[in-house]
Amino acid sequence: MIEYIFISKVRLKLLKLFFLDTTEEIHIRGIVRKIGEEINAVRRELKNLEDAGILVSQKRGNRLYYKVDFEGHIFHELHAIINKEYGLGGKILEKLDQLGDVRYLLLTTAYIENHHPSQYDVDILVVGNVEMKVLSTAIKEAEKTLGREIRYTVMTEEEFIFRKKKRDNFITNILNKKKIMLYGDENSLMS
Image (cartoon, rainbow, N blue to C red; front, side, top):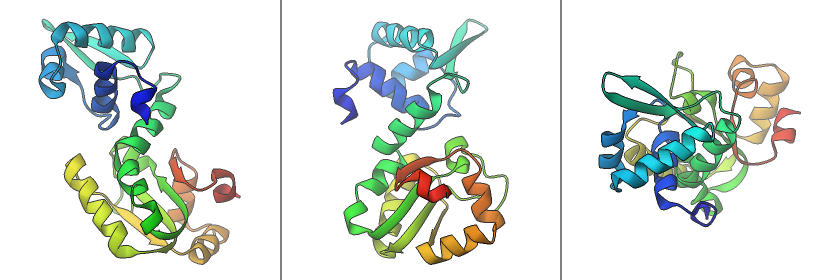
């Protein structure tokens, strides 16, 4: 779907490269190797993305390195779109109709930042009556694609409501930080 929005296939490849792994900091030749496009087209699109405040560059030695601009005014929205379409979110949403009765599905701050300071941090929270085999298969496929372990928690809506009312640290931590809603209404999630 997103291919219809972005006219340039090079720009889309760059967005996927940087937003599926926001820790990526890479020089132009490395980018060319990773996405398999002509260097001039890559340079032109990197300049466009930098001018738009989506990427930032830093010169080190004789190389120019690019990375995501976390302070960019549309960082969070672009990150959500790319992850819903191509990342972990896309892998799970492909199986949504087979997952059962899902009420909420969200990517957490730990996934967004690829940082798990606590052993209890999870990448994805699924609330509802879920077909665990389908979810497990989707998670394993995403792990292969992303090249990293995906931590997830599944709970029923009743358990989620109970834990939210009790101000459970695990649930409060997820709700009070950045998240990407893949499915469900964020307002009812928070109320």
